[in-house]
Length: 387
Image (cartoon, rainbow, N blue to C red; front, side, top):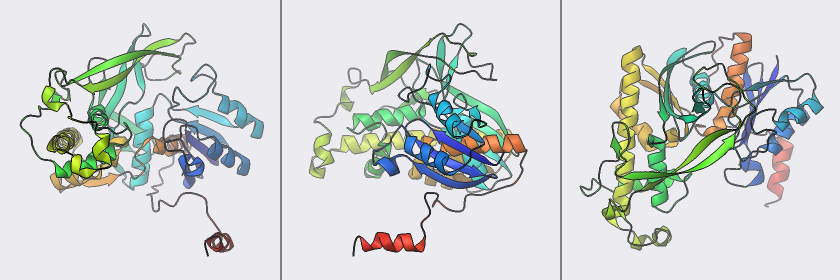
């Protein structure tokens, strides 16, 4: 197996090319289409197929918005790839979302072995044997070693009656008038806030306090792909019912948290912002980073390791990352710069490579310039357009 095409048909859609275990190319579809968080990495996918003879195609978590045949079963991109090379293999990692995240950060870290921490909004879904949706993975800690060992130390599941760490951050972000994917703006606002005794604790026993947050649900039907993990529901062509959870701050029981004006007013006029908005941002930043630190401390105590690599969308939070470095001065951290779901394209491809080849080669990430390469002549021609 020489060349692997990995891609993520989900928000932060992306595609990569792995050649002999080396990452040769990676791009997010939004860089091509100029559509933020583009879910459909079709152009990047086709570009790699057109220019390379691909031996294997891997993918991470397809979203329900990405067109497939029977949802996750027999995805149509397999049929497209077969037109280019009928001998291509296919490996579906859509039921290993957190493992794809963890593999990506571990293989990029340069560590020989490490703890892997993954924290994001929603990962792979879990079902019982009656096909009822139980919940989705939210926080996972792994013991990682070569060539492809990712042993789960502990895993938290987002149950229907609970709200996890990243979702709390997203909920406060939306309460402040931004989109769920704009949590970085909440992080940026947090240093302007302070402890406010009128804002209750957001977490109780590690999950969102039901007195502060509430959730609404909508039913979604899809077919879950097969897996070797017996905690997940086995392959079936019968649709499975899951619940998409939407979370909100409970203003009825917490009227002091209700904003006095549409937050979009102060998005464009900072004179209209109040202390409440700033203090809410401070609170969610403070509470979540402390809880993340507790998870890491638990994994360190369990393994004794002093190397920790981190991925999942939450670790785009550089304020938390700085807090962790200060809290654990004796720990060597690697924070994956491509921590969003875009990175799972690389993670799934690398899992496949190291599994198939039992490859122990350590290849730390050396550059983020992973897109298209240009010759000197092409660069000069591009510059001429602006001179």
